[in-house]
Image (cartoon, rainbow, N blue to C red; front, side, top):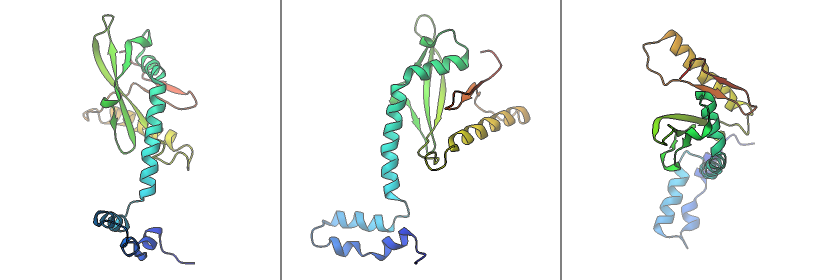
Length: 175
């Protein structure tokens, strides 16, 4: 059995010659770039679809997100919280940050907080169940350690965190 990687196999195949008959110059260039590229293109395509599904899931559960923010901030009612529009969502490599506006009785925004969701499809949750929980635990512990041992380092305030099983931890301090 050969010990070459799938990428090495791709480099051995002469795709540009296969496509010479019917392909345009731009198609040949794209294939040549794909052959030389070290990224897994199929994985990238799957990530795009999974990202879309995850965003839809969060949009469908917007009221739960607002209730969760109200819980951690100890607000009397969730209607004071409003999840921002998707255009304002910040998508990184491993997390999605969703701004949430906190409104007063007149409906004016008093302040904004961020709720951050790990991207399960980027941290291997389906292959290695528990990765998301481990990531959250490590990050929360790091925040707590830095705030206790390095008070001169500016860090965002961690109001709380929670897991899929319903277990939640909130900061003991009042707003």
